[in-house]
Image (cartoon, rainbow, N blue to C red; front, side):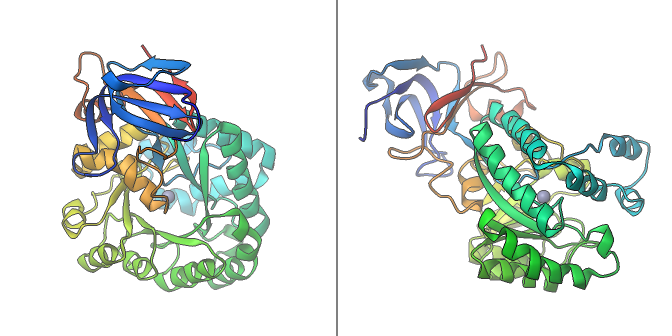
Length: 410
Ligand SMILES: [Zn+2]
C-alpha cells in the first residue's frame, strides 16, 4: 500500500467495483474504500475500514468507478437550436444539410471561433459531464476540416481536460464530413486528410476515426484513412452502420478497431468480425432517439460476445446529451440492454473502447476515480433503481484522481 491514506468512503451499502465477475458487476455489500493520493489503497468490509483525515459516510448511495464517456464531440462553437425548431416543424435532416445547415453550420462557427474560446466552451461541457460522475471523456475533432482547424480542436480538447480536471483522450475525426469547399471533390479532401491533416495532428490525438455512411465517406476511403492514421501511431475506431449499412464495422474490426460506434444497421458478418477482433460496440441512444432510428441488433451483439459500451455522443445537433445516466436508462428502454450491461457500458466497457483496461473499475492500486450516486427518493439502493429513473439520480460524491470534485447532493 503506497503512501498514507487520505480519504475513506464508509457505509457503502452497494459497491460495484466492476472488477472480476462482469455479470455481477463485482458487487460488495456494506463495504468501504480507502484512497491514498490518487490511488485506491484498500477495499473491504466497512467494519474493518481504516482511519483517515477525511472520512465520508455514503449510506444511501451506490458507489462505482468514475464513469467513462467513450464517444463525444464536445469541442465545437455555435448552436443548432434553430435547426431543432425546423425539425420539430417537420423538416428532415438531409434537407437542412442541403441548405448549408446541420454539421456544416457547426463547422463554420467552429472555424471562426478562437482557440481560447473553444477551450472555455469545451471545459464547461466537460464539467457538466463530470457533475454527473464522468471522470474520463473521449473528445473528437471533426468540426474544423482543415489542417489548422483540426489541430486547433484537438489542442483545445486536451487543454479543456486539464482546465476541467477530467482525463481527456482525443480522436482525430478529419473524416467527419466533406467540407463545403470540397463538395464535388471528395477524393481531393481524402487526400488532404492523409497528406496534410494527419502529419500535423498526429501527436495531438490518441485515436483515428472515420464517419463511413451515405453522404459521408465510403468503406474504401475509410480504410485508407484509418490505415494512414495507424501508420503514425493512432488507434483506429469508427462511426459505422448508422444511417445505411456499408460494411464499415467489418472493415474496421479487420484492422483491429478498438470500437465501432452506432451500429443500428450492422449485419451478422459485421457482428462476427467485431467479436473475433474484440472490438467494442458503442451504443449511442441519444443520437438514435433524436434521429428516430431503429435500435442496433443488441441480441446478436450480445450472443456473439461483443462487449457493449454506452456513451453520450455529446454533440450540438443529433445528440445534445449531457447525462450518461440518461443514456444508460435509454439504452435499456430503447435498445433493451440489461441493467448490468448499461452499468458496465458506462464504466468497464467504455474504458475498453478507449484501450484503457486500467480505468472503469475499482481495484487496489488502480486510479482513485470514484462516483457515489443516490437513487431517486424512496427507491432501493440498487443499480436497477439508478437506471430505471430517467436522469433521476443524484451524484453524492465525484472523486477524480483522489480529489473530491463534485457531488454533495442530499
Ligand atoms: Zn459521433
